[in-house]
Image 1 (cartoon, rainbow, N blue to C red):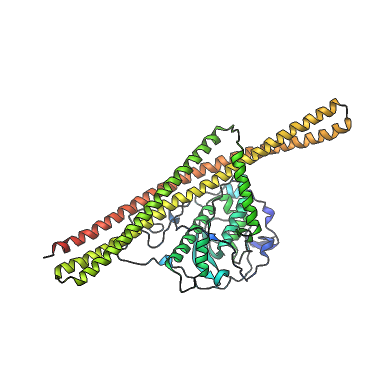
Image 2: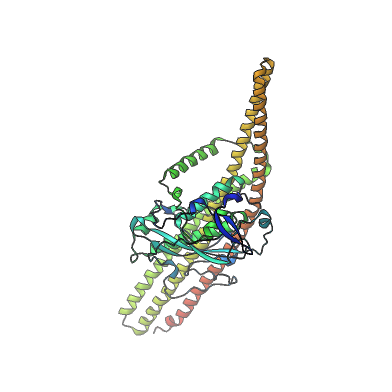
Length: 508
């Protein structure tokens, strides 16, 4: 795929290339001076983030929290093992030790890849991004969360093979905004960034290091996983991962300029709100006379898929809630059985009740792990694709906007030609020359608008072809992993009760 960005966007900073040749480029004028005093985001953090299931990546990139019963990263699809004793989830309690802002250090960035490099990228090219080690920096409402972004790759135009940087949540949102502004109009499907969450943000900001409860830890873990999934989706696109802003985000070992425009309460946020309202009204009021059968069928397919995925996601949320309620009820039963065994005077019956309590506690752990699998594999996969379909709709609407521009140019050209004809009939030669120039101007606009419309149509077809391939693969992986997880949990529950049967028969 062709790189859409302007290669001249990098200038003014020393960069060491290849065999030691030096050239002068820059990441961005705004990156020349970085403040070490972080201000509060001023934003409402995203909605509950999601764990480590990566949809658009190879199976080796998929991961889940430690409590999950999925196979380990890179392991074959064999039934995973779920612990049958109550344990805590280590990954859900991130370190929130206050950390000083990352010091600004000089950085050199390799030259931007050419279009030929992008087109020659083979299937062996690998890039894997991990978001880890969330840290709370600051106190009170001025605090924010920073994340360690680790990149591993074998792609030649990256200057290293393995490195890490620290980024805050607003940096991720700022990256997404830049990519949308640069590539959406070209027909690229831009993976959606995690949404903000008012409740989650407030809880994290007001909590202290020692009072981070399980709900806050779970929120942080879900956000971390959603950011990781977003980064891997973006890096999977050859054009997006070669974008200078994306490469600066993952390579620059210094704080990025604060992305203030991501704030929901800023003037830019209010402007974006009005723009979205205008876009929504335009979508509702303008009906494009589609001449391409492919786009007509694909639009209907996307609308139907969106509707069905929303229904499926609602049903899966209900399943997750039921499974968690079952786990909670099972734990309550285990405690009651344990209390009863302690007051039972009959020795064999007391021993059996105690064993019943232990067995039930083990099934509680299995039910809880299965609830996580329901949520991580089923609910989050469908929710991700609901958001991705929203990105697909945005690309389709960009095509409609270009069609509107083309139609407007044609209408204006017709008016200018009519005005020229009237001037000629009236013998007003002073007006004819001006009319001829206007006709020529609008003829050029019509031609350019038509070329842009045809270009984005071709790009969307190519993007959708890849989107469908990845979507089918993601859902296949989801179904296989979920069935393996379900089978494993059922086998473990059966084993628990088979172990308890001799104790029950021993009651005398």
